Image (cartoon, rainbow over all chains, first blue to last red; front, side):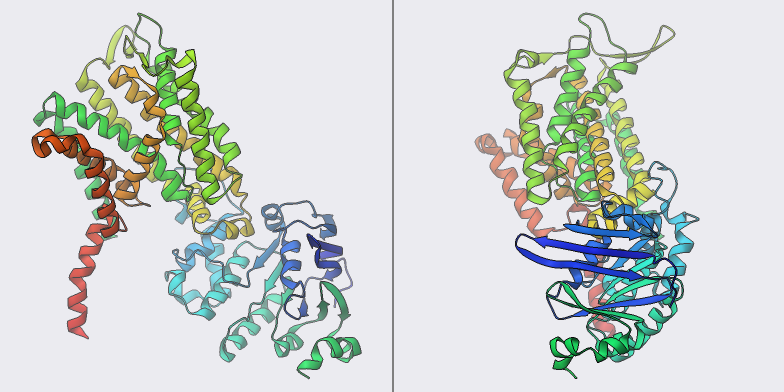
Length: 251
Length: 331
């Protein structure tokens, strides 16, 4: 693992909803070329953590830094343009649009030029190639013209990742990319994540323990919003607290 | 591509039909279609918000009416104003109110947005209705209609109904063309993305608020163009132009025509006006013509129930019905 400055760094990150502390002073470092998995039971605050990191909901306390810049007060669109991409646990696509148009619209976020009213968006020399490349990397090159609603569940999950890639992010926040996938689709997605690891800093929220222990370089275990343990997979697996609180049920 | 050609053909056919209509119609027919084309412009402005961006605005009458009032109030007494400054000035008044209304109302969503836009429109209505500024219920007259002059030669005199007709037709064509161009541009695609899934647009890196505000102001300006034309055509404005009934009528036009299609908005404006004339006609309905709103309302309810995709969807529905037996036979 790289010991350079982390691409994404969270310090004492906290999010309260009224009296409920959904994310409780969570700190984590994510480096380029590594997968940092966040696991925990339902309601442990994993998705809220992703939302706060992405800027979709503001933090109640603590800080988020991207390449050393404090982005805690940045709204989501600005963070996205700066390089934080995310996928959603519940598939969030433009259902009526084709696969290519889903990706193209995501890629267009970097070349918005809304005043250029006379040019055809579908002919954009920057967004279209980026969209094609992202779709191809996610394994969707064969279904570019298919509308999103006609895709299989697994393909929709791939499109989630493709749209994320089309924006050219440095950080990928992936919220349960394997949810609801069959064995074959899971293998394909894990292979994809393995490829993406080289160029990105990945935060992976996932329920599938086998997958997490296969692919993660660092694992953070959350319970009731707080970090119970964090470290290399072998250390986390050996941790007595983790075994008692979480892995015990399945191990 | 065949689809694109069919669309283009239907638009050209409609434009040619409107261009030659005055050859066959009397003064009543010309006046009716002039009015309907103005409604079509306002329907197109609302289509940009509802059909393209997914923002259901219930205050379109405010932009229409304020521009109309601006046209009358800004015109000098006893001299013909120039089209060159009066038109932009009237449109600017509508756009300015749209910027104010959109700037605040776009912070709300869904049904709250509908109600807030209605509230802003009612605010404008009461200002016009209850202050000396607007001349009260009776409205105010535009005594001399604007001209377009160049070097002392009068190019357009809007006093003449036929000139008015073609000015409105060209305005409609330009509005349609501009919105069609926008629909395929990056701005238009981003608006479509906001309608489909605003959360995903933000996650991709779009600050959606400025996009929605730009669409709102553009829509207000186009509705303002309609208001200018209406005030000039009738030479008269009254508070009814700003009433929520008109906002509702425009909303019905685009739903009747088929949301999400520019052609639907135009078709809906024509269908709505023709139905209105039909049910108002004593020659057809006799004494029942007094209750024309009832007939119009029932017809609209029935047609929306039968045609969930509007009049523009009829052709598609028929094509599918024609294909279905063939598919069934093949399998």
